[in-house]
Length: 96
Image (cartoon, rainbow, N blue to C red; front, side):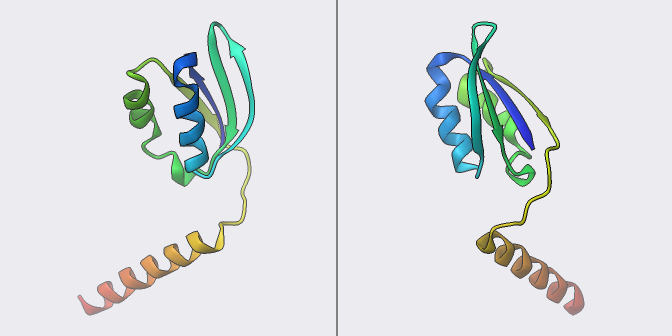
């Protein structure tokens, strides 16, 4: 997903660190209406609870927008986790 986060200066380090932790790639940082606008690409799976987590990190002072960007191959360690969870769910369903 293409994500743009609008955040006050004092939260810049926290937000950029959080986006990196979510496997995001920061593209640009620019001043927009007195706030920093951080443009990044982040996997959608990492953004499901982002609105409430961003509100918590910034005391409700930040906002964000997102739009679809492109599909990309999942990293090997993430793919193995998804496959293992699907196999466990299939096994549990077969035993029920």
